[in-house]
Length: 323
Ligand SMILES: C[S@@+](CC[C@H](N)C(=O)[O-])C[C@H]1O[C@@H](n2cnc3c(N)ncnc32)[C@H](O)[C@@H]1O
Image (cartoon, rainbow, N blue to C red):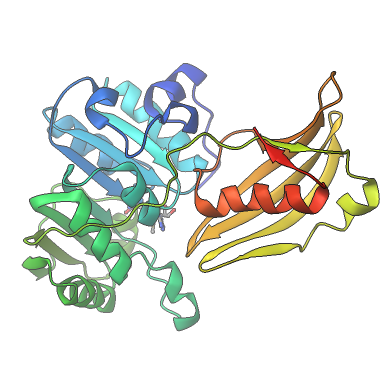
């Protein structure tokens, strides 16, 4: 695949729900779409062809696509625009966590995942989408009777997803089939078909809802006041600095100086929910030295992100106070 052409900014604004638009968690999707309608999510929509087809066919439903790379957004948006769609939005990030954090209890009618990367090696198993935590998330965000559908070219992946969701108790398996008849074939589906691969489809229905605890904090992101400007040697020693406990951890990946201030590139994880972001240390005209999250997309404000700010501020400054 070649690089996608960048759509006009107003098209991105129309379809991508940027971090700055996400006010209040979980998101009130009826406000985003300006109507009450059944809501569906496609995890890993790839080029967006299926999502575009689905949203056109079900104009009475609203749709949210979740993908990791920005390139997928760039490919999908022109198709939505050409089709004149108003019932689809895109989120960028790891669906395992965005589903839990951005959708409220019993808000979803359907969650679809087609041809996920299987990550067959055991050492990569942590990247697979299905897990007991994902089952708990689905049991929360689906409405009772709502369904999760998986289509894959890997039989073992279909069987394990079925086993993990079945083992979690709240679901019943309503379809488990080989070679399903499908009205629209995704880009990867067409590719696998050419290679003569078989397709497997599993649909589970939520019978017994459960609550999945959320992580995003309901408070303002902290701006840290440092009592002094950190010296260069201290700043240069930061890469590799780690901190945290009890499933909360952060690490400084890089430090550089630019635009009159220091920038730190961090990764912070709440259990396995990892986020990368920048922190900037800058001087105000009145002499204050402030440290705050910088740039877009902003991380979701979780205990690990807050801890990273507090811990770094304490390390870089004596007598730190937070705004
Ligand atoms: C093999 S591609 C299939 C794309 C599309 N569904 C199709 O059938 O053409 C798998 C897609 O899943 C996305 N993906 C993998 N893990 C994901 C996750 N945790 N959250 C969101 N998207 C994910 C990848 O970025 C990739 O685009």
